[in-house]
Image 1 (tube, rainbow over the protein chains, first blue to last red):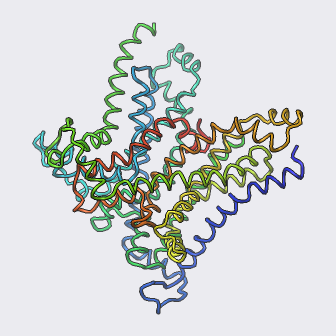
Image 2: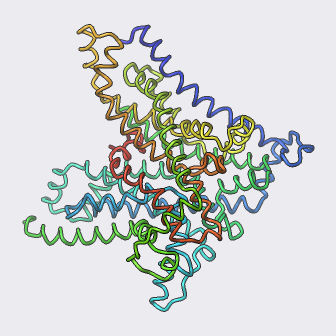
Image 3: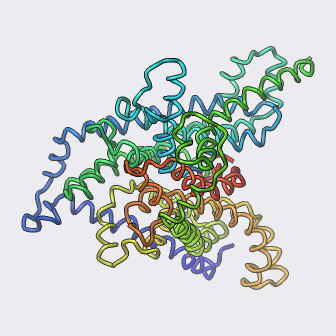
Length: 290
Length: 274
């Protein structure tokens, strides 16, 4: 159906998006790659020059690097585990008939719309503060010494905050998927005497598999680059206890002005994200073929 | 048999669901409650009933010029979304209505740009912004947010446009509609709901973007994300004021979010879950 005229038009209509994204993707990334091979410090311009892979070596040697990689992975995996398990349980609960379902849904989904700095500050000051937070109030009520969350359990505290932000997302997606499960199939299984666990294991879980995959991949993309939550709570500390890879790169680039090393770190972050992206593209791509 | 247990079952489910929902919502609820307390009340221990004072709200505006940040958030999120729509609508349109062999590859490639970690390009972008005098400017940040969300906008629009039946187009053509007439009278009315949903979700995403908006601004172009982050310093421990500022920062987007639950699922899963 597409004549030559319409296909020229189509190309013309697509051009702005494609060109913008092409420039946006290639130019800064190429500059970062270039910087990652340079000895480059804006505060000390005399020592500029090409130094090959030394920045990567320096970055790898930095004890903060290993810590930041471990923290990045722990953060991603822990939040994924909490949100997937919690999301499935919540979705199963919310899928049942109840009074006020609309309001319950609104309450559950709300944390997702809270901007990261607000979420982090609210948890830091009003919930987890060792002196005045709600957790401290509860601890004192039971006669227990309140926990100094961000000093003693910095990464765990950030995991809680980030999980709180992403639990609604997982729940909403899984609930949407659950609602598309064929009601007749469920009833048939029930009639055949399949118990709740059997139905969940052999009917619900396979149906949710695709939604779970999508949640895992999309959350991973965002969780690999958690930043504001760390900035306003622990600032990466104490030491490097809650520094993830993005935060380390930010520190190197804008606080220490070690641009070469920061760029090397950035390239490593890109490689990490690409591994995940590969899987996500496959999952989403399958849907396109349908 | 099933009917007999329904009411008891429903009651139990309702109670359980409400308890869980209120626990999840609690930090937001407590923030809203605290925003109506005085500073002394705010640190006086757990209390869900505020005195109802509005002093924190007036203080936030008077001491830190809250409204300016709010305005920046509105300009940046709405501006970047409109800009993205202008660029994305034609692209999504042509991909949905005259797809070629490469359409799928282009879509996948666009999605892949979304996965580039921001830190990887932090310094180049910082340099470009500095050299072009775009640091702390609304224009620079608007373009930035537009680029970040462009792949999602194209994708969302594409999944909506794809559902518009092609036969309608052919019927219009048979009736002698020109290309322009086709677009204005036939397609636009059918595309508006999809465009509106896309707009809503992207305003939310742009409003909450908390990396570039914090790093590339200082005062003039700083939106609410940057403003709230400035409360993290120890001398910023004024909880009632923090709560008031937070409440104002999240309220508009919370309300928009409630209306966009369905679009959110679709948009953020790139059509993989509907």
